[in-house]
Amino acid sequence: MRALYTAATGMMAQEKNVEVISNNVANMRTTGFKRQTVHFQDLLYEHQRRAGQPTSDQNTQIPAGVFIGSGTKVVATPRIMSQGNVSQTERTYDVAIRGEGFFRIQLPDGRTAFTRDGGFETDSQGRIVTKEGYLVDPGVTVPQDATSVAINQLGQVSAMLPGNIAPQQLGQLTMSRFVNKVGLESIGDNLFLETPGSGPAIDGTPGSEGFGNLQQGYLEESNVNAVTEIAAMIQAQRAYELNSKVISGADQMLSATSNMFRG
Image (cartoon, rainbow, N blue to C red; front, side, top):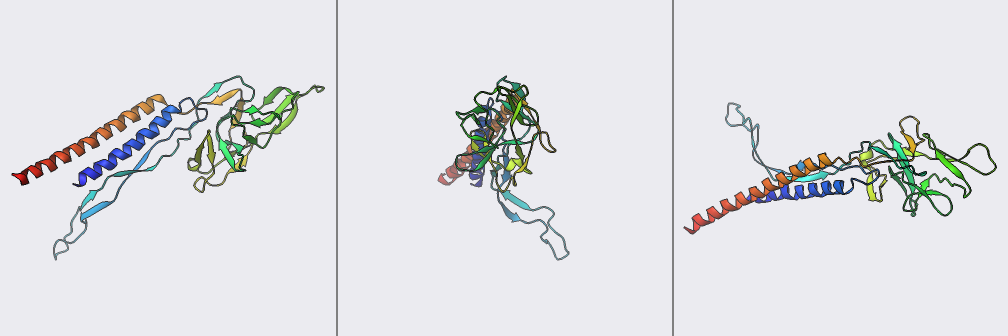
């Protein structure tokens, strides 16, 4: 019976839906995390009677056909790239992006990754790096004897150095944005990679046209909303239960048919 397989596709689709929701909830406290949602599409149809077919020699036609669907599938799990809340940390190298853009990160294999997580540190050489030790591109090195390091809204990094009465500029943080940022590939560690779907990175500096600005001593929180995820979980559970009831109903119908033949 077709209903068994159709309902099974619905249950499998809702399983994936719950997996996405669980990942969102698990990352509620992940810096710069962007929640995902699930998009579904219906599967192929069997055309048992096509609309528009002639029914007589007088040009009469069937107004509505008979199309039997075969279920559903998950077609995409795009990220919602909305701005998360910005919370104060008071740490020198924590930087939040307010607006559009991603920090550029140099991976050990030479690739460039992108992130909204501005929880940076300095390594043994004084370079500004991520918590995994990946270099923030372009490289900015803070001298060992520097004090009062400041990162302004335009991404300019400066510090007080011995013998100077004015702050010395150490470097400039840059950012990248994308025509289709939903098309970025997630690779973990709060990092994304450019893909053909995202388009090439558009580089710029904080505060310039099309880019947000920076706020030192703050981090962007996850944009996951607990109430939204709970509502989505309830909907997924109900859809799963209804599909399971369809399977139970189809099983009972097959059982009744089998009993008739036995009789």
